[in-house]
Image 1 (tube, one colour):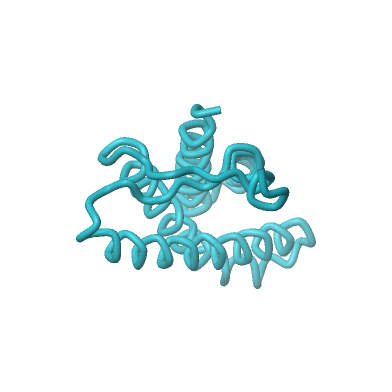
Image 2 (cartoon, rainbow, N blue to C red):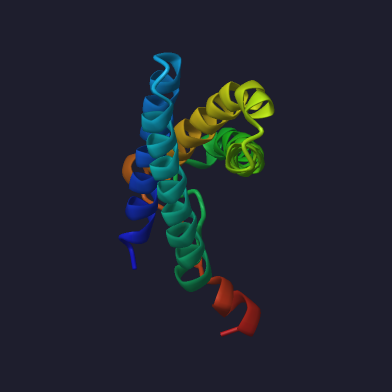
Length: 151
């Protein structure tokens, strides 16, 4: 399933785009349109997560296939991305729950922070994708299922 990394990357780009649209809409005071944009952003993020997990479990994780002398820089960058993406996920879910529970005061405070973190995670994720699959040829891929079952 070599198409899954591309599909998951497209979904995170769509999600980040709708977060940006939603942010602009709320600045203009268009609350209903903001809610729709952010809901679409959340669904796109969910589709990203499903395709990413499917790829990781079924196909596996791809190691860096670029030059050995820049592997350490890629690894540091990847760790930075993982931290941003994880924090973005936690903030994103928290922000959505606050909105659904109509705790708008807290939602308004955390929303801009969440958006910035989300953009950071999305941008660094796209860069990781390009480094793994476009700029350099991906390294070895090991399926989680194969790794666990040992075949």
